[in-house]
Image (cartoon, rainbow, N blue to C red; front, side, top):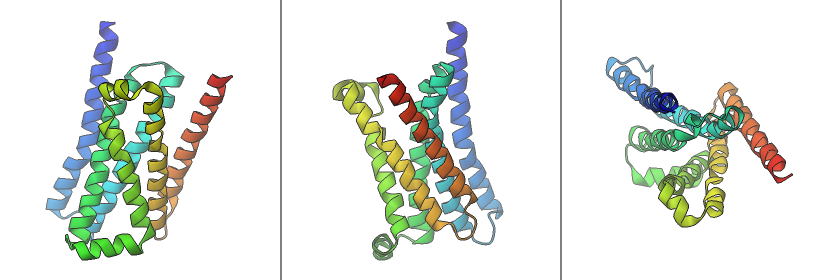
Length: 199
């Protein structure tokens, strides 16, 4: 028991390091001027890609636990989900500040005119209630069934994120296709598990 508890603690620490290390790299790269010809655009893209990867990784923790039975995967699910939200919020703020220069008129215009901006924004908004109810107290207050139904919105948010990524791809769709494939596999796994459990 003590060994398993230590392993979970170390796993939590590894997740924290893995999720925060890209931020340190981004700060260093910005100050060294190694982000390419358009550093603001690079920051916006990097934060969005990192957030989507972490969101998909959060969803994948459920299947990982089901296949392995190791409780460490579930122990870090809330932590990883909050890190995904952190990076996606950073993506939105980088877009608003570095790309739109906090010009609220143009920000509103982009939201109205560009579907991919709306998809990304809706996906981000859907994650907020999930983060606010990620605590055990919230689950107990809502009831297990209602809580589970609410948190299935993570699949909708991830799908919107994948569509957002696809629409902003200019010529290389490989990352968007990979993200779509991973999400599709996770959804199929979820549906298969639900069917097995029901039978």
